Length: 446
Ligand code: PLP
Image (cartoon, rainbow, N blue to C red):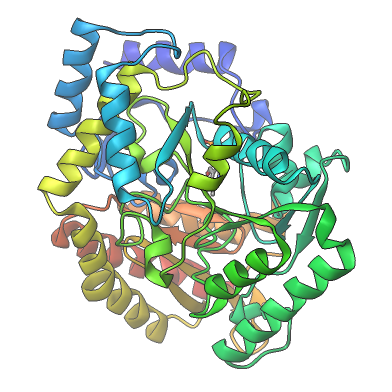
């Protein structure tokens, strides 16, 4: 075993170039296996995965129905060019379209989230004949050139080409209100006024799309106040702007609905998805397209495509994932887990740990905002901190791991995103480990 682990570690360090990292400063954990809500290393240490990989294993690791579907599809037909009609591709598209709101009934498949975003923006620009796209400062839309320039958070900094035709604006976030609001209603109203001002002063005739994450994910887990998304829909209608909801992270059960847009009863013109669409077992993403935008390309060729668009193995995994989620009530389970276990459990932790400034979320998608000073709401580590500045969060993450929980930390927050079908016992166990680790954050209070 140990010989294996050393070979894995050595080849990784020598040949694998990792995302978002200074290559010599990382020590990736060699992982030997995974099942359900857990993965384990070669020494037999098991970790309860509260990050769902990168918030995508919505039905956990190695779900037997999805593994079997991939095996069956591999035996039958591993691949076929995107120009053909294929049973699993048609069925995956049908199952996804059945679950999207309104008339978003056509699916363009990509290999992941960033490509979905790139294609949604391309569709919006061609549909409107306008160049600009508006997105929020607190957002993450992917790491390809267009998507990272749409991104509002600090991951854009190393990539900013200043040529992407993107204008950033502030979305609502009451805890750190950019509008000095004190209630959700005030935050909503002021955020909508700010967006309208931005549209008017940019010139509506130059704006192709507004793109929002339905619930901002990687940049904070920020559920919008009640009237915000319907208000954005109205503004987009008024100014002839395409409304794109990016559901790459929050689609397919994460928030306790198939698509998070259902919570606010809003229908955008395009939805981007990836991750949970097949729990990430084989790379897949896509864009769900409204009838009006699909019509633009009914007799005029769509000038975009991908070699692996609608890959049969990925689509077979998607069909099996969606069917398993429906048969096993996983979307409803995610909603219940949030309402009955994670929400109350995290709020209870906040009462006992002064470093928890705010608890927010829904379904199996939560965040704790960790602060040095609850009154001033000073973050536990500064925005975009690295190196020594981010040490308190690194210590907190290490304490989680020591307790057997794999955390997802981002800036001064921990995001809590277990599998949507995490058991009640594992949800409780995760909360208990967090309880212990939060003592480390408390020790850093000002
Ligand atoms: N959009 C959102 C909302 C995301 O959370 C992500 C990834 O986390 C992406 C797009 C990019 O997806 P991918 O990493 O599959 O390209």
